[in-house]
Length: 201
Image (tube, rainbow, N blue to C red):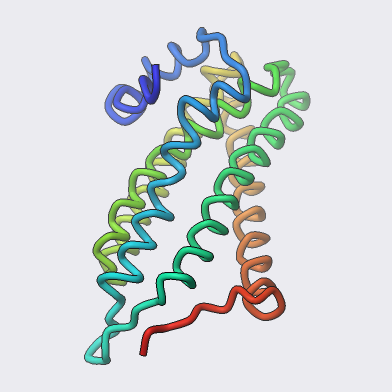
């Protein structure tokens, strides 16, 4: 069932992580049932917000992207999110060996996917492109994502809470490095790959 764990992971995360742990899945089914749909929320909303509503910074004029530029950036953003989930799943799988957590790769990808759920859903706020509000919502979503990571890893990987804390801290570091890497690639694509944003005015 598509997205069947979303409500539970947001309202009863401890119980839902146990359900996720006991469920059989593959990397493909995880992507089809969760990642592909939820990861589309931020780029679609950002596209609509940036091309139809526009950003306004202080008392300056409203800034909008052209439809073509917004579409190109949105597709790139979507692809980056899909790749990032798999990278984080691989990192969890690789680091799990250090903590004697021998979960298969597909279960590690599932952990990465469901941990990112608040970030995906918070992408709805991009429909209303106000910088301070988007940053506030994004920070709240990031905080809950970190909470889900620290709670979910020991449950799904079947390790102690103490090991889970160290494990989650390591994965959080990998996540931050991945984010910095994505930002660096974005800048390079803007400068050398023809992905520089084009504005309507």
